[in-house]
Each structure stands twice: as C-alpha cells, then as structure tokens.
Image (cartoon, rainbow, N blue to C red; front, side, top):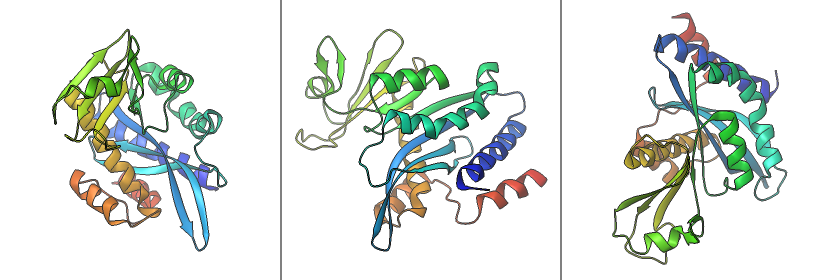
Length: 243
C-alpha cells in the first residue's frame, strides 16, 4: 500500500470510529491544508500536506502528502489533487448531512477560484487572509484593523460569507499584528471562529512533528493541548475499532 493508500485507509477507519461514537449526532471534522519543508540530509522536500482533525476528540493526523518538487507555493491543481480522493470518500456523508466538513488553511491558500472550489465541494472553510485582502467596497483588512484596539474583534458580513478580524498587537508594522479569517460560517460567534482556527493550527503543528521538532511547534501543541500520535496511527485505528 502506497502513502496515499495508507492515508485514505486511516481516514476511513477514523470516520468509522467517529460515526460510531457520535450515535445519531452529526460528525464534525476539519481538513487542514498546509505546506512544510522537510529536511532529509542535504535535501529539503517541499511538501503539501492534508490532515484530518476532530475538535471533539482533539486528535488529528496527516492523511495525504504531495511532494512539490522544490517549487514554492502550490497551484490550485495540486491542491485539488490532494483533496479529490478524500472528497470522494466523504461525498456521500456530506450530501446526506451525516458529516460536516470545514477546510482550514493559512494565507497561502486563498483566492476566488480556490474558495469557490472548496466551498462547493465541502461546504465551509476558515482561511487566514493577508492584510491587503479586500473585504468590501475597496476596503482592505489593513484599513479596518488600523482603527482597532489591541485584542478587539470585528466582523464584516457579506452575502453568504464574512471576514473576522482580531487585532493582536498595538504595533502596526508587524506581519502578524492581526488575525483575519474569511469563512462561510455565518452562525458561529466571531470568537468561536477564531478559536476553531487556533485549535486547527495547533493540530496542524502537532501533525508537523514528523517534519520538525522545533521548540515553537512543541510549545504551540502544548498550548492547545493537542494529542500527538507518536506511534503508528494505523495500529491506533485498528485497536480502537476492536474495543
């Protein structure tokens, strides 16, 4: 079984466990897309990764990986390739309403075509956007958060989507002085959208343990108390299934 096959096997087993434990309740899962640099000796592999995360169980693990062969950012075609087999597995449950999926991604994974694609397939996303992201009527994120105080949260609602902005620092010349998220979720509180993205980011960092042991990654995992699989997730799924 190749790596893609193993990831799809893990996805199916994990969904089986989640659906069995939830009973008649809807299962909520998050698919986190990101890009990592993985050093192997003198070679640096540029990897596009997809991981599944359960907020309720606070567990996540990578299920798909594509080697970008030294290129920079990924293309829409490569991201679709990462998601297409996963979508086919989830499609029936999404259409029947048994599973609710949200795509989480960083600032690299935005754009009208990409947002339209994941919105039409999976139904929802929470994506971090850059400071020059246009919110409405020519106004960018930076134009809004410049008038905000540290820790303040605002949201701008449009037809079917919204942008949630939180000012993180009093200093306006820092790259990470604000957190701005675009989402199709019109019902959750703005603070809850921020919390979900933060937990997803912590889970993604935990999943990146196989890529790096950087101290900042470990601290973020501890902050969000994410469970990290140090063993074989295949064994975990099989053992849990048999109990």
